[in-house]
Length: 254
Image (tube, rainbow, N blue to C red; front, side, top):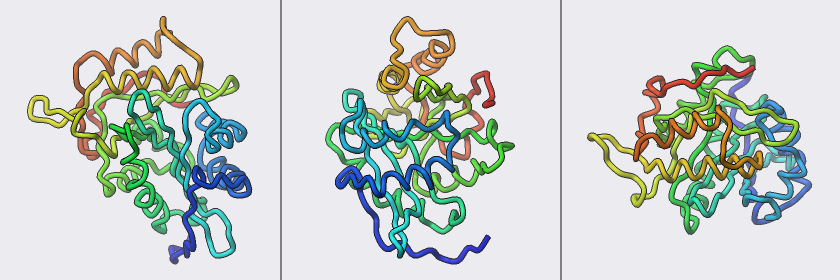
């Protein structure tokens, strides 16, 4: 595959201008070929979210090529009561990956998304290389290196993505990364940087309630995940190079 530069002629914020003519090819040609069906909600829900009609407010920006084609994009979800911005998806068309488009998108949204009123933490769910390195089409280590260059840190707890629809399944084998942590919720514990676990726990509960409609009492899997998150007052914020110190939960991806 050639590594020649790809010209990005425009960056469009779809949550500001929800152009369905761009949302549909972004979903079809970028997101749907980059993530498994279980990792991706359906198109109608995505369109509704970008229009501000969904349960969670959806932010989205796309990179456009010379012919107006969608080269890549990034999606965020705002969980306002918990003060969490979830960086849900970052993807570039498979034939032009590794050309800096992902970095351009991250740098484009950071000043606008991370400074939104009430956002105290910007988190992302990413594949744990220990679980996904053998999956065809996956390069989780390269993705971690990209995020490391962008200043991300890994939370010292594992994660399971909730089922994103009635026909979807939960997806284990994730890490939670922090791209932005407000000083009001970042603390020092035993000489290490950490984030308050109550904030992360409230977000996870809300995320699962929004995606699955599930509330307490929780099933064993979600209960165990929440126990790992909320067992202590804080969760360590580690350099990405130390991701292997995060304890795994059982259940490899199928």
